[in-house]
Length: 416
Ligand SMILES: Cc1cc2nc3c(=O)[nH]c(=O)nc-3n(C[C@H](O)[C@H](O)[C@H](O)COP(=O)(O)OP(=O)(O)OC[C@H]3O[C@@H](n4cnc5c(N)ncnc54)[C@H](O)[C@@H]3O)c2cc1C
Image 1 (cartoon, rainbow, N blue to C red):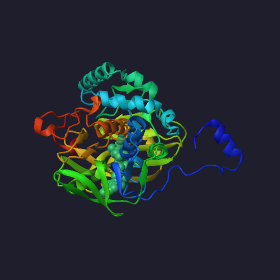
Image 2: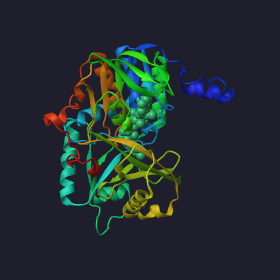
Image 3: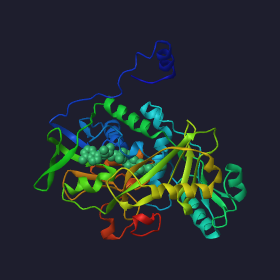
Image 4: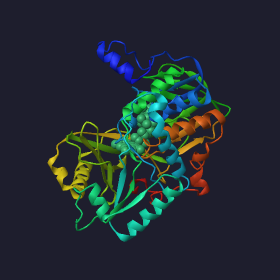
């Protein structure tokens, strides 16, 4: 079943009775060429690109809950490529280019909306750092504009420019940044993978790995053992727990990050606005709700819920940046488990166990990486060679000292 304007009109006129399920609900087979553990954005996009780019379709995605029950549908939907370091910027720019053609590519409306993202600065030193970042973005073809105070005033007149602690001096704007509807991204990839023959198996938790003579030959699951030539793990906030079943200890901590949505309002926020010094960022959904978030709760956990202290913190930061938000009513908030790596950058790599691969450490920024992460992981799984834009995401980088410390916070995930 394909989507087109003609199809939508036809279904609208005939009672919407012709739509079929987006993906099958198959029983797991005894064996696959490749098993992906984790049916989040990254697992589903990996399966999609394995099938579409590399013609590998004897693939299963195993998801312990329902499809997109994790961070892929809990995040605040921001898509951007405003990175600076050579290990990161080409990867995220590759991802943004994939985003730009994604809806046509997988024939699904993911509500990709490139309304821009602006990072505010509050001092001369911060402006210089942002100018440097903007130059790095230009070199990678990502595009950036350094706005002064008046430029920001034109974009967002409602901000508190004269806050005594953090007066707004300007911002770095990436016009191609924006938002996409998070769960639709998972559904689009799932449907695209399923149509090419991938089995998406929900309610199937991986409970162990069968490793013989240094090689992973199967996964144990709640629906029985499944053999595989290769196993690719991408379970985001559960990375530590899942890889521990293969005897590996990762340089990753799991922490909770919360998100908030207000009642629907008329259009007011032009794109995404981030207030880094106060730990606050905001955008507006197509339904009108203000979607915002802030800092991590700041402790290690595997619970997908946060606490009230952080709610207070985020709302305070919002009031500091744009006092008018105090008039809006928050309708919902929720938490997701983020896989914080020590330098804030991810991993897409083989492990020391043959046939076992790992993708994780996306911290609070892996949604925008979904297309490139899936593409590069599929490349690694298919060819046993890293993709050129993901070469730096190695598991041994703390041993070799080749950190990718984008935030310059050193080995302190709670400070990112
Ligand atoms: C509140 C919040 C806001 C965020 N905002 C942004 C943002 O604006 N922009 C951005 O780029 N990023 C953002 N992120 C980060 C982004 O959501 C994540 O980095 C990204 O979604 C992680 O990849 P994923 O989609 O594959 O993860 P998930 O969707 O979490 O997928 C992992 C899956 O693995 C499954 N799983 C776990 N254990 C097992 C097992 N043993 N067997 C089988 N399956 C298993 C889980 O059930 C889950 O479905 C945010 C995160 C949160 C929590």
